[in-house]
Image 1 (tube, helix red, strand yellow):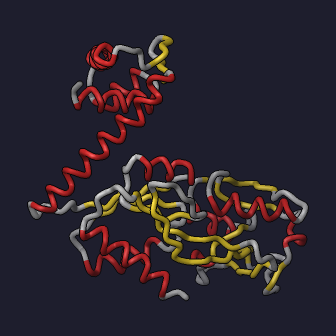
Image 2: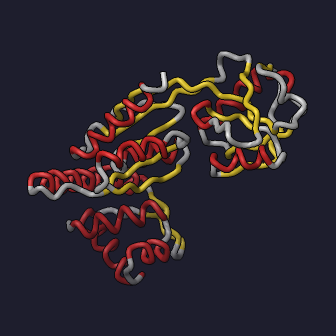
Length: 291
């Protein structure tokens, strides 16, 4: 069994399509197919059910994928540790976020200390983030809501109330506190289902007897304030995302459940460089300063 076979298998298993996997790996489809066939021959069992170029993991493949991902993960950790020993510290930190509103301020403060470090940041749903953490593909996740798993370390760094953002000319703009029942006939803008803030707001609104009527759903939380300013709809906005410079009023919501936990998470088995450990302390320190 070869390392290349494992790398090819994991890519095909995730995409379940030979053409897409070959394109991702920058190899020919015939070369990829031969490599997977040799792996199956070595293992003595088929790993996929085949339908043309479309593949689907069978029971053998699903079980082997867990082991293959773990093997590649451990090898990657070993490489990072050796780089550290050889004073070749990785220059890039891999981050995934659902709670992105505070990230620019965190990065700005950290880069004053470590201007040599670069960041690769992904905006993911909670489910996608969990998968990335378990596969060891990111150094840290900044998430709301928090979540727990045996292999994941979870640190709650902040309790963040959700506010209601309305245009300054809106009928509710003059109020400082609002009840959810007053919002049942309003139009809302928000992120798509699967993001923590959206799921929390929907759940709490359902409990009080209505489902928010969304006229816009997107993947960019930072765009919501602009849409509120344009009077497209009103929005639930985390307190950490409040921006008092625009033509938007922020109202407190009279509901104790409309708060989110912001958590910093990392894989317990992933090697963390000194730069990564410094970043972790920077995140914790930033939120401690908000309290």
